[in-house]
Length: 79
Image 1 (tube, helix red, strand yellow):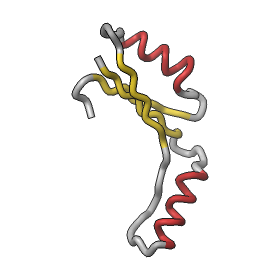
Image 2: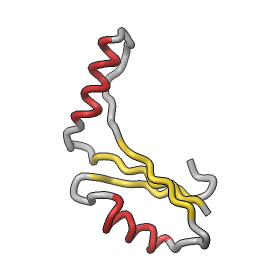
Image 3: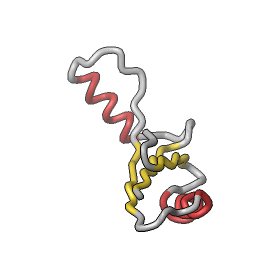
């Protein structure tokens, strides 16, 4: 089973990488770009199906910083 975890900064947390990308896109004459947020995706392949509680614990304790980041867990077929 494969699980994808998307981690991204919470609203209100400064995103300097996103700001730099927005500036670069604007410099390249791409129009209509209001904001860019940068995140990360973690893909984990399991030999057995983990529980939702296990996945949440992985995120809360290691994969995301709950003070400044939110995350979403996508299981097989979720996008």
